[in-house]
Amino acid sequence: MKKILYILLVTSTLIACDKVYINGDLDGMWKLKSVAYPDSIAYPSHIFYSFQRHLTQLTKDNDTDLPTRFLGNLSYIGNTITMSKFYSFPQEPFAAKLNHLKEFHLYKDSTIFNIVTLNDETLIMTSDERTYTLQKW
Image: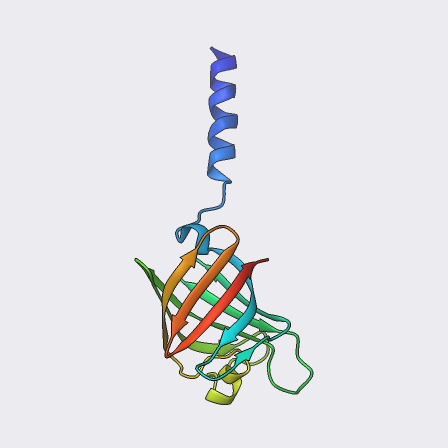
């Protein structure tokens, strides 16, 4: 009897400590590989989008005085991702301005993306005639 209780305790502890992914393959860190515009393609370096639960984090290795990280709201429903309301961190929080978001190839405070491809390695999404290709990091 004690052995069964011990096994149940260990099993429930391991299950309780497991990460909770509510967004499936979307959750995790993604490296932005390219952004295809109607007339050109950009190959940004060192830009990362992270998705966890209802948050988006934008991170960039920065060679300017602009903040390098922003947190925003995330909504993932069906094949649609909405990212909005970005704030800087860990420095004193302030709302992201458009010139900050342009560093991450975002052009509005609230951007809606349609998912073309999503698996455990690749994310391809479109928004406003742009196609974003990301690779799981």
